[in-house]
Length: 148
Image (cartoon, rainbow, N blue to C red; front, side, top):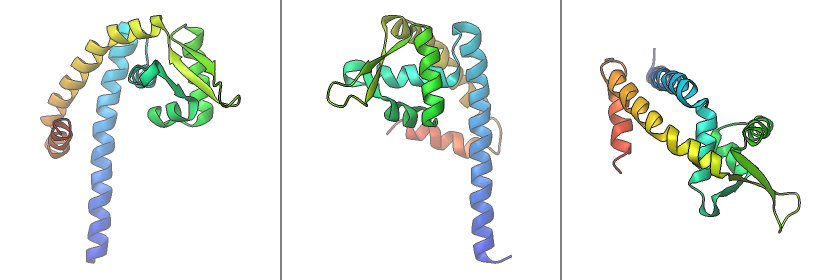
């Protein structure tokens, strides 16, 4: 095995480690958010992204990027959240083809209620992951990135 092969293996192992940590955290968050708030991780992510916007709205394409979803999956998700009165769609006045998505009062309230659960589960999942030797370095990097 040459140097190039070693580099490929290192990258592949890094990716597998990242995927393992992501899956561990996402699974814990999914269970807790569903059980306590009736939200999936991606629904929480969408509500959280909307709450951080100036004026509390985003274009659908921006929301798709924030949630790491395709445009069709974002449309379906927005429809589900709209049916639950957690967000609303608003036609863009400048561009009639553009649609904004905005958090409703009910969506904001649910997010406020869900944030402590999300934050506690995330903290606990990272603490547990730090005890897994293969994940320790990545957990340390994640923790350090939050301090910058």
